[in-house]
Image 1 (cartoon, rainbow, N blue to C red):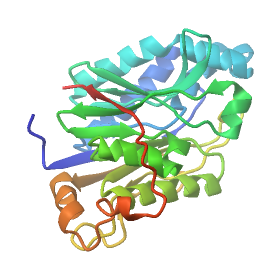
Image 2: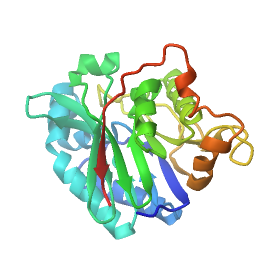
Image 3: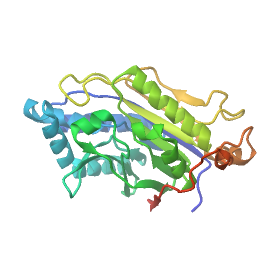
Image 4: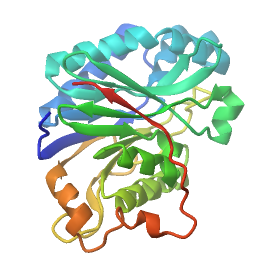
Amino acid sequence: MSQPTTLKIASAQYPIGQPKTLAEWEEKVALWVRKGAATGAEFLVFPEYAAIEQAACFGPEVYGDLPHTLAKVAELAASRVQFHSDLAKKHNVHILTGSGPVLKSDGRFVNAAQLITPDGAVGEQEKLVMTPFEREWGVSAGGPVRVFQTTLGVFAIAICYDSEFPLLVRAMAEAGADVVLVPTCTERVSGYHRVRTGAMARALENTIATVQSPLVGDAPWSPAVDFNAGAAGIYVPSEQGVSDTGILAEGTLNAAEWVTATIDLARLKRVRETGEMHNYGDWALQPGVPTTKVTVEIVKLA
């Protein structure tokens, strides 16, 4: 399958609100997708835990209680995916859905995001490493690590905290990922910068692009996502002719907006072998580098 040489991608600084009905929520998301597609982007990325916004539609007995929030939003997972699938087809874009709780057959909740193509194919990545807060909420670590082959390129998803662990993203890159999507939900600016630092480091180490998409705004009605801070960013290795700073685009902190950039996928692949530094190829030269590889599942969505 031939791959395009460039990719225009849009990352959402998505503002959480308090919709009164599911229809109101759908109208908001549809508007965001329409505006994202209007930028000319081929891929739209939404943030971690954006799906929690749906809990607001069911009154304080649901949105004010975390276990009820997780259960209700998980109950809506299939319809939420179908709604995004319809939007992807309508606007001819790939979409990474805002992640949310998914109920497993053993009764556990995991945090999962879905990659949806315009022809209706769906791939799902569960978050792999839980934050202390998620453990308190009763959200469990998921798996496996996946890489998704699409008509636009090969993608992986490192949900928020996962992007701070080099071996996870290294495995994704070694399995062919050109771009790693990093949907995030961070309460404090310090948390945003931790993930931003991780995303930029993973781009440098692996000669790939990383795309950070944050949840922004305050939702005092929710015990889970009450405060949110961040900015979107599209990152590549610092390399002359690619980006001197490693930043293709960044948004305004806490603004509600789309942030877009065009990633030169072909040039990134050339830089792996002919760049100023050879971080990707020299990975194995590190003292103590693990010899056991992380298992990665390849999912074909094209």
